[in-house]
Structures are given as C-alpha cells and as structure tokens.
Length: 116
Image (cartoon, rainbow, N blue to C red; front, top):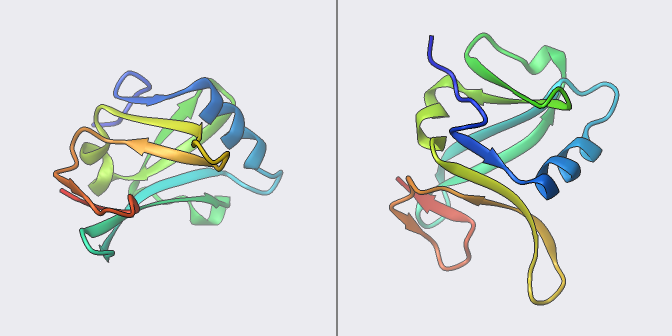
C-alpha cells in the first residue's frame, strides 16, 4: 500500500510546533488536500482541522512524530512528494503556513493558486 512518510513530506520544526498548537482535544488531526477549480491557476492547497468522523479510508495518514496526524486524500498523495511545509514570517511580520511543492507547474501571482 502506498503512503507518504516524513521522508517524502518534510515538515519544519516551526510548522510542527504551530500545527500541534492548533489541534484541539476533539480534533483527529489535520487534513492537507488540493482543491480543484479554485483560483487563477486552477488549484489551491487546503489545510484544516478534522474530527474522527471526518477521517476516511480514502486518506493516507501520516504520523508526525507522535505529535499529530496529517490526513491526505490518497488521490492527492503523489502530488505532495518532495513537498516542504513551513511556518514562516514574511518581511512585513505576517506569519503563515507555506507549502513549497516541487511538483507545481505554475503559481498565481498572489501565491495562493497553483497548477499541476
């Protein structure tokens, strides 16, 4: 069975710390997916908290050092190979999750919409 590991999907220490703090007691973990038909480039990343009832057998589950679980729809898993998830502060002091994916073929000027 196919599944991502922390070798194929890198998560920086700052992103791990930030994501772990976002998870409440009733959350099963985080779902990372690609929404199609969104934005100028056709796709957007979606990262959100999910509960146990949201977990599906159609998800790959990636344990992040026993701290939390990232669920990725199996149809999206290959697109995340080689991706790095980081929590960054930009030059204006804004903090956000950044997804650096080498599989993207394009990215909208706003940085929110991506193509494959």
